[in-house]
Amino acid sequence: MPAPYALRAEDSRGRRYAEPRHPYRNDFQRDRDRVVHSRAFRRLENKTQVFTRRHSDHFRNRLTHTIEVAQISRTIAAELRLNEDLVETLALVHDVGHPPFGHAGERALDGMMRRHGDSFNHNLHALRIVEQFEQRYADFPGLNLTFEVREGIVKHSGEHRPSEFPQLSEYLLQLRAPLEAQMIDLTDEIAYSTADLDDGVEAMILTREQIRESVPLFGVMHAEAARLYPDAPEKLQFNEALKRLLDCLVSDLIDNSRKRISDSGVQSVEDVREFPRRLLEFSPGVEEERGRLRDFLHRNLYFSEDLRPEKEQAELVITELFDFFMESREALPPSYQEKLLHEPLYRVVCDYIAGMTDNFVSDQHRRFCAAPRRARLSS
Ligand code: MG
Image 1 (cartoon, rainbow, N blue to C red):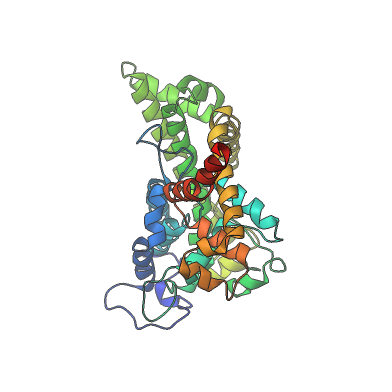
Image 2 (cartoon, rainbow, N blue to C red):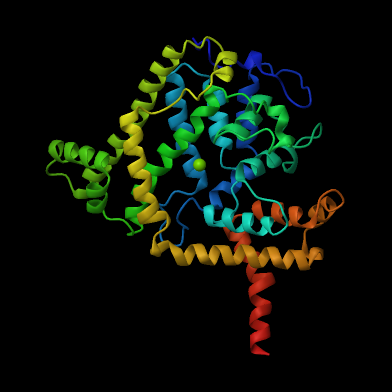
């Protein structure tokens, strides 16, 4: 039985283009299936999460990360009696707007757009993908997703000021996101922060000992794992600790949110929207631990010297390719040249590069930027 504050598919504000109902899938289930069948979703397999695949086949990529977020989100949604179909759809779509090369790629694209007085944001790009770029259906452009999924794409990582984003006014920016969308930012962080500890060790940038010593909550989990499995190999003790850390974050989010929801007195989705604060949150103690984990990852992994060359190369590839297409619009594919009738060149170039996978952007860079440079150098 869904909770009264869960979004029900029957109450959806509907799609941009009206469609007949499906005989046995509700609208959020259909949205989930449309996301899974989209090209942008398939491209996630070849987009960097934190590490490129050069060093190991075991690192998460954006696709496997997305599946982990969906799994965690469904578990929490079931416990809080939220709409699991909507939560799953929002989790599966949450990263489709990411450009190649992870956050380095996003920073580079944003920097290039700022030169033209614009900006790049992966959530807003995801909205453009599902509204315009996916061309799969004869009846409408994009995926024609329900309002609630599009709203979740816009709002899941935080609030947008209505005055700053007049183009998003239909998404009720003055109101909170429904609980299903509020969850995604938190489950995203649970998934990537635990996974990045794992991948960081696999990449030999972090050591298990360093994590035990620097992340207190992990240290507690590890002590328990070592006590229960004193003879297990270190790697398995580490895995047991990681599993417990994930479980602790998820359980705390469930318990604390359940209490907050109950204390708030919300009885409907409208109440959630009108409530002055987001209702899904970790308890203060775990929130503090989460902050320590985040700081640790920032200091020792995301901004580590080990990853710097990879990130610099990523930024170089994107900025040089951006410059190249700005100078050579005839090199854009015909479908993007058509967009120039309605949009400025820098926006079309940004959209084209943002949609590329890591492999494709590297190929394009070799073809258009690196090869001519070599030719110039050797002449
Ligand atoms: Mg994510």
